[in-house]
Image 1 (spheres, rainbow, N blue to C red):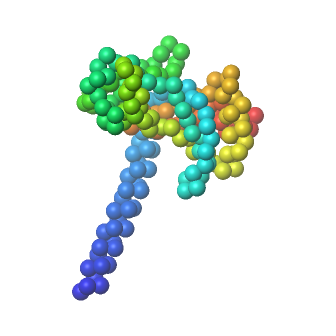
Image 2: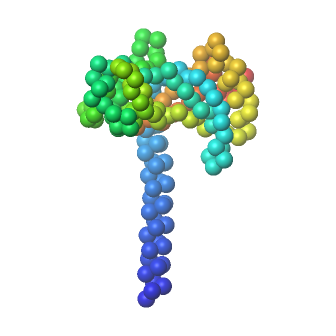
Length: 179
């Protein structure tokens, strides 16, 4: 009797872990398949995560100026509405504490507020890359980020965002490395 209870608990825990892993992949693939593309300029740093591998740590010059900044608090979850500029790059246009019914927006956490400027913990701040290309990509990214256009394309759908590609000199990073 006691062994069967432990076995049932084990099976439930294993099923829960499998469900969480699969649902995360499904959500991200849905955003990549149906989400709208937004481009954001980046500033690079390249660290290593021993559990997830090589990645490019992306930094952005993105904040939002709002006269309502006093009504928000550090750590608060909000919805940031995106606006595509004439140059093709997206920026934050406004903030809401309720989910917008239309348009492109990302659910984010406020990092900190300084006067009228609101800064966010951006959910797409890491671009993971195949270990075979990691060192070469790191050097190329550091080289190209000075004076050359480097940016990422992010798919956005219903408040979720997923990085689709990192671009160096107008080419996807792997194509850039192969050229």
